[in-house]
Length: 521
Image 1 (cartoon, rainbow, N blue to C red):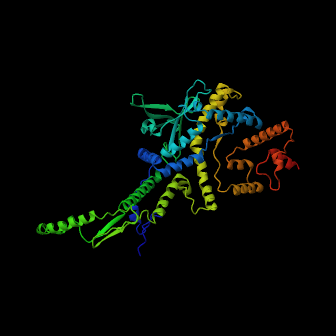
Image 2: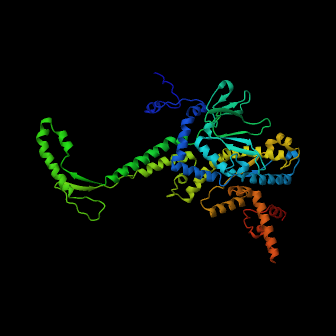
Image 3: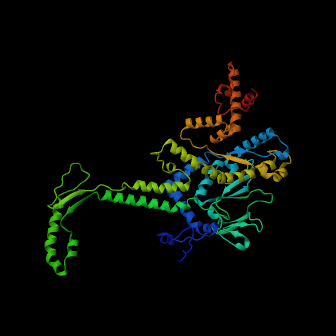
């Protein structure tokens, strides 16, 4: 008996498997090589879709609103243990930095090299550019201006300005030059145009000698990848198919609208009759048939078939009938197939089908809540690695200037900042809260988790898109101001809000002093 031949565990010779895998045949290679080969064409198509496709453009704007809101807010969490500061001193320092940076980001002439956009607008532009090209290069420059406190400015750079040149001998790959021993990027090669319109190459360093960021290159990908590519790349074929489906359906519907009525007749036209005749027959029958066609034409001259007039009666010749046509496009399967294509596009964009289409038919509270729960972590991840990284680099450069200029003071000055840059630049970037299908049910869930002890007040504030410390400070300031106004009006002071809330299950947000009093009791 012959022993069976060994076979592979994957892609074994199942019936039809050879045919389905024969064309096309993919090849394994570095993702960086795939991106370098496809970057211009893929990103050009994605940028065109962002401009000309209403579904894509509208969904991207919605993602910008969910990811950025009006602006990503700084939540500064420095480690000041090197200075011997306690928690209170650290909070006071962080509060001052947050206030200063909020003022800086709200002024276009302070933050934007072109003096056009606020920080929130720049963050939104970063997200839009990332969807179009998968990467965002930006330059942090020093541009002192009259009437401005700071010289740190940021300039967004179009992605296609970053060169596609590759030279392995000098560690240059797609315009990104790495160190000889340290693979960190040391410079970037840009292809720009001078005022005369001539193309020229400019190479700019990634950081200066003190570690201050000069070029920010934001993208997401896999290992050994030096350039980004649009996240729409897997869906570009589907976008094209949807456009073709919509165009073909619209064309068919318009044709049916134009040819809404026809006359069915047993008499062939002159051309059809001649096509059926031989050469000898044409001369004999042409005269008789032409006479018949002329009589038919004269009859129809006096019979006006006007579909725009109500109640019009047309008298046709014997054997003729008027047939009205109804449009059969879009047909019953159009919506199902179109939604199938839109679902794949929505999955690639990282949003729910309802977000892309605005169609909530058949959606329930549970389905919407489950969809948000599955998609929101991706939204938070992209917020952190795309606009968050861009803003973090700008914040580091701004904070360095503030400390160097003495507007923000730390022990040891700028030298201490350079030595402790990583510890002093630790920050989170807060955006809009997670959408809720039902605010009342979400509040009840927060209360339940708080009572069970598995969710803190800070986590609840994070879910609501608020800063925990800022909420406490605002509540204290609000109560103090209200009591001052009541005292001026001769009214008795109000009870602290935390005491007014029933403690049967504990308040959703309470003061820290209340916890201490409860523990003491």
